[in-house]
Image (tube, rainbow, N blue to C red; front, side, top):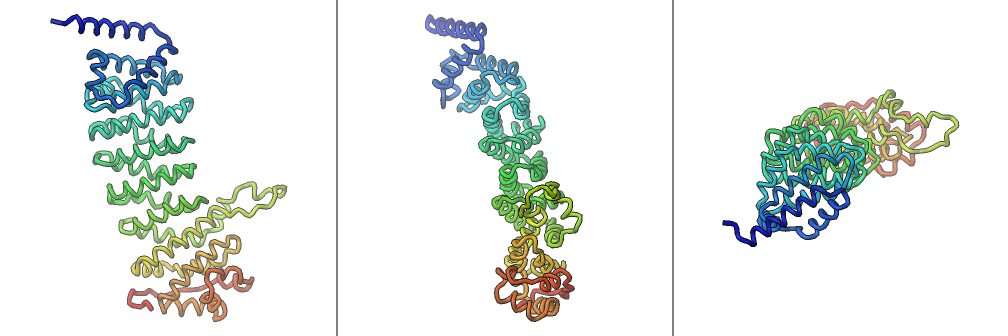
Length: 410
């Protein structure tokens, strides 16, 4: 038999629901703000006591309002934060099931794709998806089955708010862990993100790729081209992450393609130079600017990457030499349009010359004794001492080091 106290509590709850059902957005926002202030950190049991065992009924009302109003952004922050309190509470399994059963995951993912919704509200949606993702493999699979990887990746690429981008990155990494059915989908989604326009998104994507690469272990061939393209970035933090990932991929099946790609980038074709040239640079009325072309930034980064790989592994040295890296480094040293290409190529070439007698002999023959001495005396500043004759020698060099073995090192 229900006690008088319980009857009063139920009566109060019904009155509360009546007020909610009959109220407009201003009153409902006030109710939600009061709920958020009073119930942060509460357990599911405490929430049920607060609502006289009717917590699920209130969650259902909030979720219904979310589905009806999210496209208009009405009290969206308060709605999402209130749902988060329910789903993050200890012992909230029941709430999560109820939220998912009424299409909660789909609604959250739709929120991520709407241009009219603020990044702040998308951040709240991402946090709820993280709560669900941390609840087990079943929820991760549900998110992925709802095209969640694509939605979250697009949100990361398009968002202007760093907090939103970071929360999207966290969710993508979460979806890769303990989710064998969809971890490859997450991995490929991250690879696709490398081509986005946002340097911050590229940086976060590269960080996440390094983690996810360790999960999937086998590298997908499609990673090679977009990863090398990232080397065109003018942002050092992006380039550094790309270089780290390139190094980590040396133990995978894409190693030959990456090495071949890095060497080829040292000698961009005329077509690549033209393709990368901003049209404004061809306007005779435009002021002259010295900003390097993306292909030249990529060239310098490639020379730097080759130097890093060579110093870390004798086997990689051998592989690179056998790909005619010496000829390509000499060519890059002759790029008078981008001094960093010259500098990075000179430093890397100096290492090869110092490490392999065969390289030393071939370089000395290819560029002559005088230019060779200049290289070995001060490779870092060599570009400042080159004249037109030196440049012509470097660009037209015929260096062709015979195949080498590790035992032929100095």
